[in-house]
Length: 164
Image (cartoon, rainbow, N blue to C red; front, side):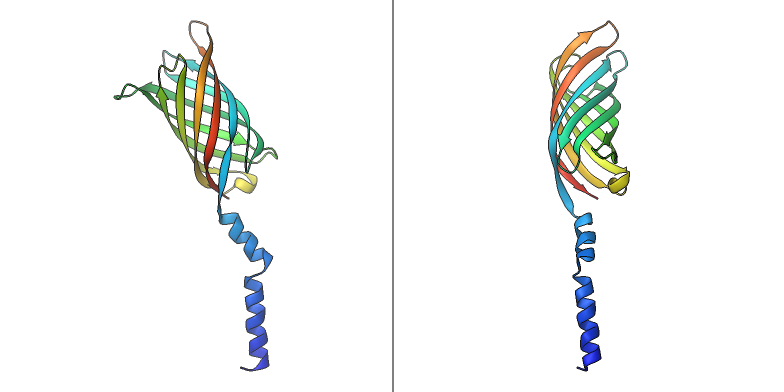
C-alpha cells in the first residue's frame, strides 16, 4: 500500500472514531429515565375530565414541572381507563411532550392507584427529536370535593427509556 493511501485510510478511521462521532451515537442511544413526581389532580366526576400539575426529579431531566389533561371512563373490566396529553419542562427549560393511556384501579374519586403508560412524541431543545416510553405508577389520595370537582394528591414513581 502506498504511503498516501495508508495515511488517507488512517485519517478516515480516526475521523470515524472521533469524539464527534461518539457524541452523535450517544445522542441517539436509549437512556434510562427514572425518578419521582408529586402532583395535584383535579377531576370532574360528571364528565371524567381531569387536569394535573406536578413537580419532580428524574434522570435526564433534573428538577422538572409537568402538566397533563385528559379524561377517564369506566372500562369493561371494572377499572377506569383513560387517555391524556402531557408536557414536561426540564430543569433547563427544554420540554418533552407526549400522550398516555391510564388504568385506574378503584374509583377515580377515592383512594386509588393509576398506572400511566406514556409515549414521548417530541419536545424542544435537546429533546427536539425525543422518542421513548415511560410508566408512572401513581398512588392517589383525595383531598377535597366541592360538589363538582374532586381534588386529589398523587405521588408517583417513573421508570422508562428515552432517546434524544
